Figure 1 (cartoon, rainbow, N blue to C red):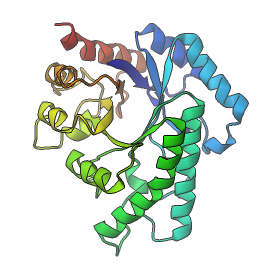
Figure 2: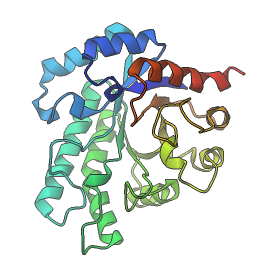
Figure 3: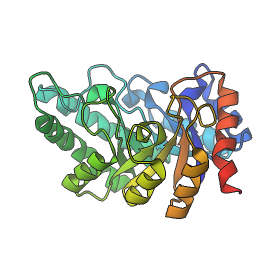
Figure 4: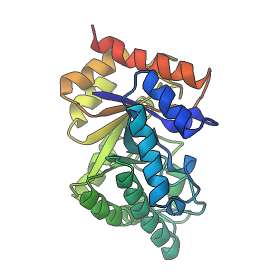
Length: 271
């Protein structure tokens, strides 16, 4: 396993300062929320993309990929009743694939619950059909560029479908696409009745990425989530991908989140 942290943790920091600190803290990678780079990533030309990649390379970091994909620009939705909105969103997902590959990333995490909600008056089945149709062009682009697109389960009340790893597996079966995968997000998986080590063993062939966070939305080591059981379960299942620290509560501060989070993840692997 290799360890990364998500860049929005360092709100207000420059890209250069973020990369320097993340490397000094002992991480090998950094994961990017596109809205932190630009409201619309199509505004980032080849020179801007190369600089982002060069700064990370110079710090000794790999750019893992992208998450929080559809936060910006405003108005995106994969499930909207309007064909034009869905088409615009599908095209933007393809643009994000191009950005991810240009930066050297290999994984994209599609959570974005507000952009995949079931519209009023529509059924879950209709929303799922629209969602799957909307991601197919991005999956084809991802396959061509060596990127995996991970459908992220999010439990209620954040989302109203694609709620857990079981449902993610069902949607992956429907897609039947080599670039499609899911993700183990520890916070989200904590809402499942099944213990996380058992979920890992059951779905290890399905997820291509891991987000490490506590059930309380803070970083590893800042709550009661048992990473002493989760990390060995990942190792024993043969997971050899990235584990990215992703938090939603940024207390006490980025430095402490980063250092405590990494120590919490690594400690059970050394025992």
